Length: 321
Image (cartoon, rainbow, N blue to C red; front, top):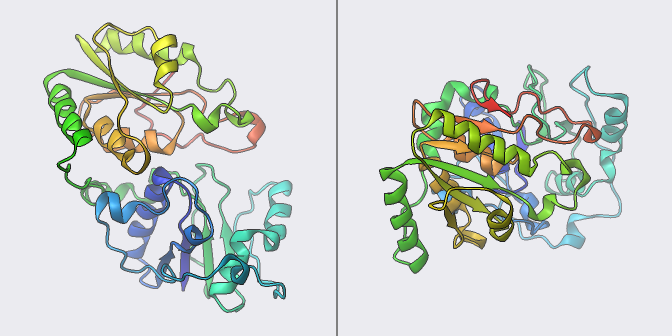
């Protein structure tokens, strides 16, 4: 049996589910768990079932309500750790061997009753790994799997799965209905800006700049007649102050908290997309079904100091600026 650990925010969950869905067709013993969210309250928790009404068939251990102190037992047996890629750096190999100290591994040991297991730990970048499922026995798969090669053959099905729940009879969703009408009536272009937690993280410092957005807007103007820009961000005040946009640009400022997924929905409905270096932004563009869409993405996804390889994160046809 193989078990995929779901973790992170909505965009990461979507990569994990796409990886899970595509591979479960080949490997019926493949399972998944959302147990991580019982001990980690980051983002909005596990959202896929709420945002897309996704079935949790094949999910295990997800309803365990164990307390943190029980998840972190003092007496632990060492799990069997497997390094499945020859291309891990020496530093990453040491990190993998030291994984026994991580909260995630302690959780895994708890739910598996300390039975020995193998671990394949992907380090959060976009590198594609082949033959992941070749090893037999109990294996834990930990990672985000941010490479469409894992699931591109199932693109049509995955797009159907990732259909957003219907808009509700709320004030905010009435605004969303009005925005959708504007998006459909124009040569709409979404602009997504993420600041928030990125500002204080050195891995993202200077990666996506004001100049990137200005170059992207100028590029779109050369390709799209009378573009209408729709701006989505966790810092719209910064966007209004720093981005030089036409006067008719629309700033969407009401989808927040557990309703923030509506921004991804609206971005996916635009004809074209200017994205930032986030999985949330990536999916907004990937779910865009316009056959003639133009997607502009950052040349770099993360600082070189991170040691992570995101060279394969975006489809080749997306324009890197």
